[in-house]
Image 1: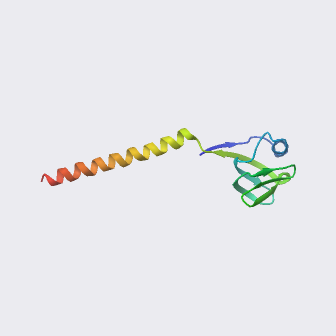
Image 2 (image 1 turned 180 degrees about the vertical axis):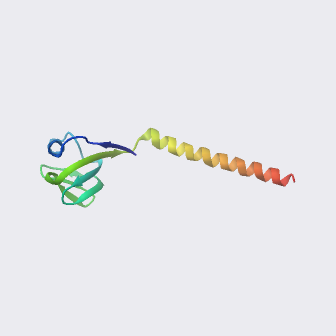
Image 3 (image 1 turned 60 degrees about the vertical axis):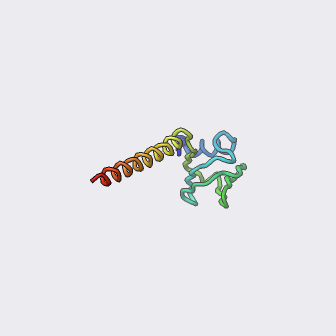
Length: 104
Protein backbone atom coordinates (compact mmCIF):
# COMPACT_ATOMS: atom_id res chain seq x y z
CA UNK A 1 0.00 0.00 0.00
CA UNK A 2 1.37 3.37 -0.98
CA UNK A 3 0.25 6.42 0.99
CA UNK A 4 0.65 9.96 -0.34
CA UNK A 5 -0.20 12.68 2.14
CA UNK A 6 -1.52 15.86 0.53
CA UNK A 7 0.68 18.57 2.00
CA UNK A 8 -1.57 21.59 1.50
CA UNK A 9 -3.57 23.87 3.78
CA UNK A 10 -7.22 22.83 4.26
CA UNK A 11 -8.54 25.62 2.00
CA UNK A 12 -6.33 24.45 -0.89
CA UNK A 13 -7.31 20.82 -0.33
CA UNK A 14 -11.00 21.75 -0.49
CA UNK A 15 -10.57 23.80 -3.66
CA UNK A 16 -8.54 21.05 -5.36
CA UNK A 17 -11.17 18.46 -4.43
CA UNK A 18 -13.90 20.63 -5.97
CA UNK A 19 -12.03 21.26 -9.21
CA UNK A 20 -11.33 17.55 -9.68
CA UNK A 21 -7.57 17.88 -9.48
CA UNK A 22 -7.08 15.95 -6.26
CA UNK A 23 -9.46 13.00 -6.03
CA UNK A 24 -11.71 11.17 -8.45
CA UNK A 25 -14.16 8.29 -8.26
CA UNK A 26 -12.25 5.07 -7.69
CA UNK A 27 -9.52 6.67 -5.55
CA UNK A 28 -8.90 5.14 -2.12
CA UNK A 29 -8.50 7.99 0.36
CA UNK A 30 -8.14 8.75 4.04
CA UNK A 31 -10.02 11.95 4.76
CA UNK A 32 -9.86 13.84 8.05
CA UNK A 33 -12.86 16.07 8.64
CA UNK A 34 -13.99 18.31 11.47
CA UNK A 35 -17.33 16.53 11.94
CA UNK A 36 -16.48 12.86 11.21
CA UNK A 37 -12.82 12.44 12.13
CA UNK A 38 -10.72 10.18 9.89
CA UNK A 39 -12.48 7.95 7.38
CA UNK A 40 -10.84 5.62 4.88
CA UNK A 41 -12.93 4.72 1.84
CA UNK A 42 -13.09 4.43 -1.94
CA UNK A 43 -14.56 7.53 -3.57
CA UNK A 44 -17.68 6.90 -5.67
CA UNK A 45 -18.67 10.52 -6.38
CA UNK A 46 -17.44 14.06 -5.86
CA UNK A 47 -19.61 17.12 -6.39
CA UNK A 48 -19.29 20.77 -5.33
CA UNK A 49 -20.41 20.03 -1.77
CA UNK A 50 -19.67 16.40 -0.86
CA UNK A 51 -17.38 13.43 -1.26
CA UNK A 52 -19.30 10.15 -1.36
CA UNK A 53 -18.18 6.57 -1.04
CA UNK A 54 -19.07 3.27 0.62
CA UNK A 55 -22.16 4.63 2.36
CA UNK A 56 -20.40 7.82 3.50
CA UNK A 57 -21.12 11.39 2.60
CA UNK A 58 -18.50 13.86 3.75
CA UNK A 59 -18.95 17.63 3.31
CA UNK A 60 -15.96 19.10 1.47
CA UNK A 61 -16.11 22.18 3.71
CA UNK A 62 -15.27 19.94 6.72
CA UNK A 63 -12.12 18.40 5.17
CA UNK A 64 -8.90 19.38 6.96
CA UNK A 65 -6.44 16.70 5.71
CA UNK A 66 -6.25 14.08 2.99
CA UNK A 67 -4.16 11.05 2.07
CA UNK A 68 -4.42 9.14 -1.19
CA UNK A 69 -3.83 5.40 -0.87
CA UNK A 70 -3.06 2.96 -3.62
CA UNK A 71 -1.70 -0.50 -4.07
CA UNK A 72 1.91 -0.44 -5.18
CA UNK A 73 2.30 -3.35 -7.63
CA UNK A 74 6.07 -3.61 -7.07
CA UNK A 75 5.80 -3.80 -3.28
CA UNK A 76 2.84 -6.16 -3.47
CA UNK A 77 4.72 -8.43 -5.86
CA UNK A 78 7.79 -8.42 -3.65
CA UNK A 79 5.71 -9.27 -0.59
CA UNK A 80 4.00 -12.18 -2.36
CA UNK A 81 7.20 -13.64 -3.81
CA UNK A 82 9.04 -13.16 -0.51
CA UNK A 83 6.30 -15.20 1.16
CA UNK A 84 6.73 -17.93 -1.45
CA UNK A 85 10.49 -17.91 -0.86
CA UNK A 86 10.10 -18.24 2.90
CA UNK A 87 7.60 -21.08 2.47
CA UNK A 88 9.94 -22.90 0.05
CA UNK A 89 12.89 -22.45 2.42
CA UNK A 90 10.83 -23.80 5.34
CA UNK A 91 9.70 -26.79 3.26
CA UNK A 92 13.26 -27.60 2.17
CA UNK A 93 14.45 -27.26 5.77
CA UNK A 94 11.74 -29.66 6.95
CA UNK A 95 12.65 -32.19 4.24
CA UNK A 96 16.35 -31.93 5.08
CA UNK A 97 15.67 -32.24 8.82
CA UNK A 98 13.41 -35.24 8.22
CA UNK A 99 16.07 -36.92 6.09
CA UNK A 100 18.78 -36.19 8.67
CA UNK A 101 16.67 -37.59 11.52
CA UNK A 102 15.73 -40.62 9.43
CA UNK A 103 19.41 -41.41 8.87
CA UNK A 104 19.99 -41.68 12.62
